Picture 1 (cartoon, rainbow, N blue to C red):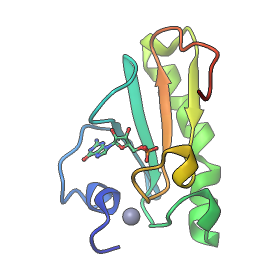
Picture 2: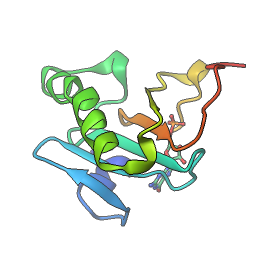
Picture 3: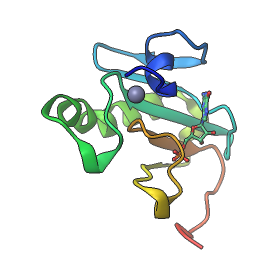
Picture 4: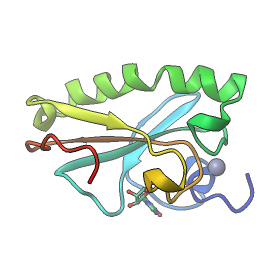
Length: 115
Ligand code: 5GP
Ligand code: ZN
């Protein structure tokens, strides 16, 4: 989608540190990491978030946990555990309206999921 930051990253029009890519998904390092490992996993096809899935993006999104586990196995620093989450809408704090999952780990993440 024109003007969408993560579409531009998926098309490599904006540089990012890509750690995984296949036909429908890309994973890259978050620009402002909140943990030693902080990656974003996105479908290449645009949708705003989990509330706006299309058949194409739903099929891609369904594979994200599997890809997260694959990345976690490859990143030794995630051997202690990791967290996968997606913000959806303003109350969640979503700031980029292209569906993405945060993959976080590399330290104890704490038990609080909200303040
Ligand atoms: P949200 O708040 O929407 O759940 O997450 C958006 C994430 O995108 C944030 O963690 C933010 O640091 C990250 N982000 C924003 N702009 C860029 C960028 O240009 N490149 C990368 N790699 N990450 C970005
Ligand atoms: Zn997009």
